[in-house]
Image 1: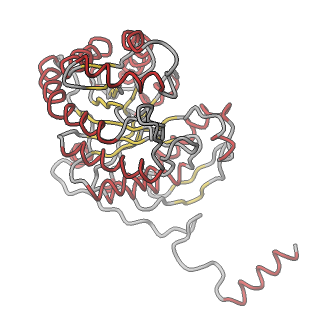
Image 2: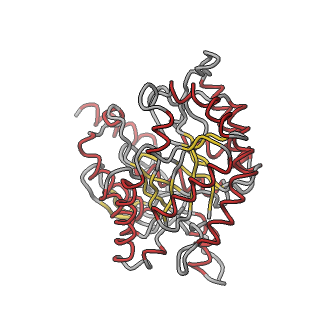
Length: 398
């Protein structure tokens, strides 16, 4: 089972000191947080994608490529990549490049995004978000598996003889998770393709996610990818850890009370009782996290949100020490002991997908086909500068 952390990349005023970090400070901090995650033995680091203040992570592939160069074994992923407002051709190119640079330590979580103004910024409409998500992923899936693609849809220009470059490492695409908090169509999409389903598991009671995850498992089996217990499920979670419960509650309360999302609403005690948030000692975090299995069955990835609401870097790093040193080692043993016979033990990795595809044979190292379609790999279709000038003049005249 994989354990890690994810960041939503918010830039929030620290309610204790009154200081608001700059973009530069938060970007530097999240890199330090990712490096610390590997140092304390965590498996995965995820960053969200946002294009509006107060968030900084508008270019997750750039950030993750930098983190890849600064780490050795950390799995790098997103939480989430916007499949609706990103061109699937660019997603195919950028994440294949990241996959190469990280030597396979990359997977991808896709989501629709719920920030309404982002859609027109990228030429789309939020009321088309679901058909956009379904169509765009269908194209992305093909771009990573077919060397030459002919395609036509409703939301972008057609492709004729198109080759996405670079091709996936070892001709094995990054594993894809589909993230959703409410949409059964996205769970169905994940199940149809045999991909993973990720529930962010932060703001809603367990019963809400039980329905989505149960539906995904049923459809995963229906589409012939394995049993319901073999479906690939990931969960978010939210924790604030201190050596003892009293210190955790005292330290986190001002951050909870002033958090942009849930501040000035329910009390911290009411919120922790109704949602997956846990504020307490390492043992309390262990106990609450183990209840996730009771609700959702055996699952393969657990990510915790720990750097939000204005928490200063030094406190986040202290929590990572506790998470990696006292919480995760116990959770690994407990989840292993509790796992039901026939349940999937691990989330797919690049190494496991390569082994599944090739067995003992060497992996294919594809070379892009020289084609005569949209992305001509030879010279310009205009043979000399005179022809270029004439063509340009004709275009201006017309």
